[in-house]
Length: 134
Image 1 (tube, rainbow, N blue to C red):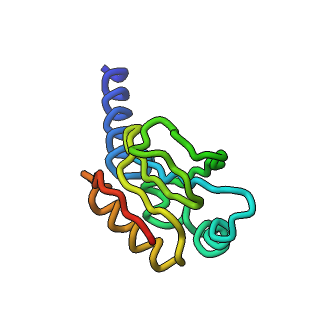
Image 2: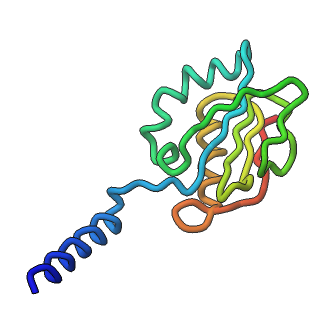
């Protein structure tokens, strides 16, 4: 009887922990395509990157950097090749859910990223649309 009770208590504690949000699970990731010597990439690294992982957006879609190859990248799951740096691609379930091409400052970045995340289902919503900075 004690064994069953202790297992039930342990299971309830685990369910409470999972339901509390204490165990983070990333539903998406933000892939930054970068190129060595790119001044806009360097500006992003100065203005946004140091605190990105501390933000709600950074917790929902952790940042992963990928070096952009000459001729562009056709990483699996992309809706179209990436040819410019920096390009930020929101990936959910292995598929592109949104895109920001270029970096024109932290205000524009956070606004566009917020729109992409708001369009995804659940805590993050899927848009399927590409957001672009010209």
